[in-house]
Image (tube, rainbow, N blue to C red; front, side):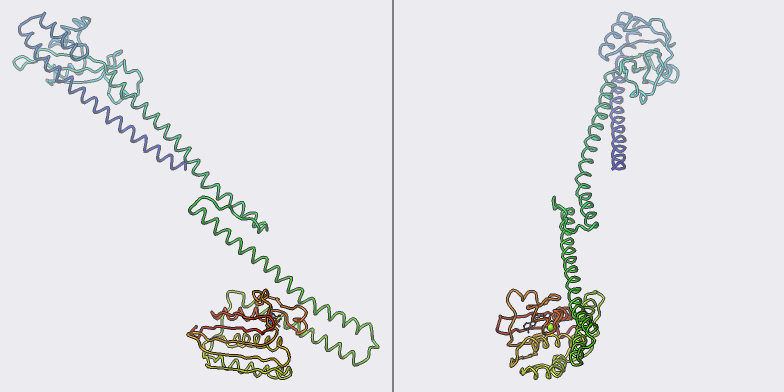
Length: 473
Ligand SMILES: Nc1ncnc2c1ncn2[C@@H]1O[C@H](COP(=O)(O)OP(=O)(O)OP(=O)(O)O)[C@@H](O)[C@H]1O
Ligand SMILES: [Mg+2]
């Protein structure tokens, strides 16, 4: 801002002094022209009177010239001696002004100069503005008195430059005042401007600092318009996301620890009974050890699911795409699940209308299909029906997994894809679920650029639908 004012101030000063100089030049020029024309006219008349040797006439001419030209008029003979003076004071004095000599010696017809009234010394008019007392300065104009092409004398006009100087000085003062006013206004405007500009930014900085200290609830004040407003809005959106992320991370960690703690607690109880009851009968001991083994399986499956999710979360996850048929994957999965379905006396039917050949990550899609079909088998009671359909719709492969089990209550539907979410906590644990299966399904389907949704009514089964683009990759 300082540099800005410096540049503006400097250019103003340069402009103002140029303007004053130009105006001064103009005023002087006008003055010189006027004085010269007037003097020349009176010099002709004085020459006439001089040739007539009419002293009274000459006196009259000098007096009239003085009053018309607004100054003191003197008539000098060819030696530079004053013969007539409209002020009647300098009679007989010899004047050595350069303006007089230039006419008498150099033969110029007119001349002009500025002199100090006190010392009589000539000065350049460019020095005049520096002096406040314009009264002390006068302009000396001379014109030769010519008779039959001989210079017989000089007419000298001494007049005050006060008026002219005054107008120039007042112009200069006005300029200084104007400059001061403009500078003051500019400084004020600059201060207000920087305040308006920097205040929202420093406010934002404070918000960011308190956020960095861990208070994720603070938000920037959205005000004004333009960039600052956009910045505040963008910042608040980012903060919202950050807060939500932080919340879901906390939730995730607490859910994960809880899930890991439960099997550990169960195992601890069983192992303690084994330690403190050495005489426990062999059958019960085997049963306990079997249970411990089951809990270990559970723990390791939770850990591997968590690892899967963490991997899928990181942006760097790459799909190992290969040519594959989704229909084959469904058939393989049916093969793997048939023994359990048979055990549950469930009917598992496939209706594959297209082989849905695609270029995708086979292992991940196997997991998707397995998790969905496993859920259907797991949550549908004995004697239930499970139908898996696959067809091509437009550019998508559409997989549906339908069952006639208990379905999912309306208010649970939005949550089933969340990590660790189980509709019926007790039922879930009973059937060995951790609530991570559908999260993995959603992650993998999204990675492939597809989407998954569920439709269900409580008590009337559920339909999971996966849409996967066929021509990706
Ligand atoms: N076909 C279905 N019928 C009824 N409820 C279901 C069905 N599929 C999922 N759910 C409900 O959605 C919840 C979440 O399913 P998800 O597959 O994510 O977890 P899980 O099956 O409990 O555990 P995991 O799959 O990790 O072993 C389940 O606990 C269950 O309550
Ligand atoms: Mg599951």
